[in-house]
Length: 480
Image (tube, rainbow, N blue to C red; front, side, top):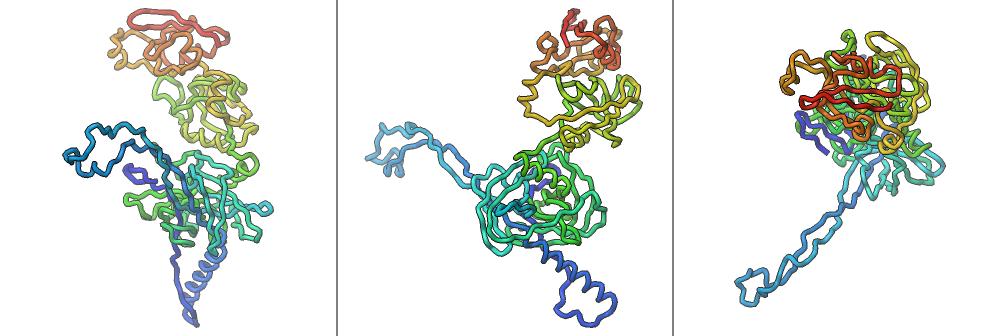
């Protein structure tokens, strides 16, 4: 569960321990003492109300492994020099054997919902993973077999269920949008197998993102806390002073693998949406716009230094196509919220419900515009591919002097270079290749990216590309 990057990112399969002040009899001390005892009593109240709603989750995964086959003879112990060994015996004749091994794991979970005898506990996806057996251990020591309701790797959340005839406490959920840096919080769970542990800290930061290139789920932001969190805390509760759930503890940043005061929890507002989807649909539904996006090009487009998400291609039949979004548009806002990067847009759209109408602020050919789009539910990659290809199906980049030198082109050559061609697209079918230099689109000369997208988006069903390839000029055509 460790990611050996510059800073180790630890996906936590457990939760925390309690720190605070203790006194059997406060007596009649100073006002400072009274304040400390009042704080101590509040901490005790939080522990008393939250611990029964946090469970230990034990998982077992059956792992199959192939063992190289070999025959066995008691004489082989002595080697071939043993006088009674069989020189004709071939130890390689037996086929490899498949063995099963049990891989066990430990995590935490939070009781958040009940339906009759069914109880539901939210935890992390990386806790239950591909588990073949799941058991839930309550605060009072009782255990129940559990099954998975749904898992979601994009948010690293999962929901499991078990049955009990008795009334069990559920944890109230707060509004994580109202959190502020400096708020007192508590982490509750089972770190390193130490059951029912509580630790205390503050909200250190809000809106943290997963480190780029890590395995941490990036379809959510995170609450940062200095409450001690260790392996085994995954899926456990981060709660406020009212004992309400504000987040699900998920990972830590650490060079040692243990807590250094850098813990991260998924905000409870994300948890609410995901749990609702699991219960009603069995899976998490994400809003889908239907574009391929990246950060804006450094040159060749008139974006006046704006940040946002650059639209490279549009999926046929997608909300983006129906709403009038075009290749080359820069998306700079969603419902009035500024878009800083393509990653942020992906998270914003993904967290919006399918069927919602959204307002997109865009820059098109140097001018700011606004369009409205109704989101669809995101389908599987295969379903998206079956519905229709990408338009135009190519990714182009500026034709720099360095690229001209590499391709041995004249310094006067103008155009854009094809950086990538999407498999199965119209451009791929037409024979456009990576490394082609596009000098004309229909009758328009192409000097930069702006020229390319302006000509590409002109009215008309047919597009003709004049291309330089290996010193020769060729003409290729595609139909929209």
